[in-house]
Image 1: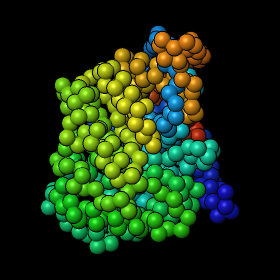
Image 2 (image 1 turned 30 degrees about the vertical axis):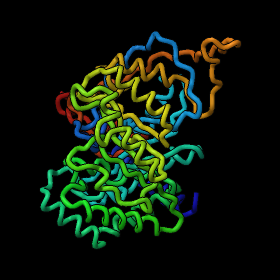
Image 3 (image 1 turned 180 degrees about the vertical axis):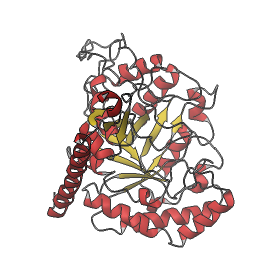
Length: 429
């Protein structure tokens, strides 16, 4: 850690301490009572066509089936668990639920509401960078919007104008600032999922209104960020599975500015089997073939259940697909309706996910002898299933209590918001 970083962290801690002290002094004055109260997590930016991340519900029961022995050369995996500090904390909890499985991937999103957040708001990325740098083999995956107002239903005509402005270099400074911050935080090898699901209609950074200009803009962003000294970024081109609004191949900007060919692959639309998701135009097989032709690894930054409910066949199929094709990484979207740990609505799929990944590490495992062989297959050691962790209940502040806004970092270390009671008059009578 450089002296400059130590100074920045010290200043932040000083500000944090001052804020807490000021609140306590205020609370201790005449007519006030203070305490900490658990309150709801801040809303998360929405990575797909789904509502913001809800507070986790009851964890599904421990599956009765024994875990499957690890596959050889298991790819790095993780989950999207929350966009802020609680997302980092839940990585260890999910690993515990999976019998100590090694979750090497941390995944979060930059909010796309304004440029200051796309640059990486001060303090937002610090906790993720700290998690990443604690072990050399970890991977930080960061979804980066290409436009502000990214989920505000901007018209196609306005998207065209914005893409032209971006392609002309008007927004370069924002991406340079982000790159410089990531390097300063000592995470220069972050995987950047830039302009994800560009083949759809949800985001302002979509490709459909002007594919040629979109590709020029992508190249400009990548060139700008790669020009920052010390960077080692990898850029992940990640459309949504299928044709969507425009074939994703029409948006591909070229091998020189793409390092990974990803795909967001949810269980949708209704009635589509996993086998059909593989074979459909611009589906999973097309992605694997396209990546091989371009000499790129594949990834699955977002995947999970969706339109077909608790579909254990999809879960089993997707896990087998990734074991076969060895993506660079995958991160399941773990909140309702997509998830398996923080969503009690999918018990059958949760059981499949947990049984397949229970106790997995990233190293090779001995392969059992095939049926009919002379040597009996070795019996894999079954890790002891941990007690099911208790999911946090929905926080409710005490009556007559007004939470004080101290910011995510202070609340994270306090374990909740500082709460000031204003019922002193009634209590003193």
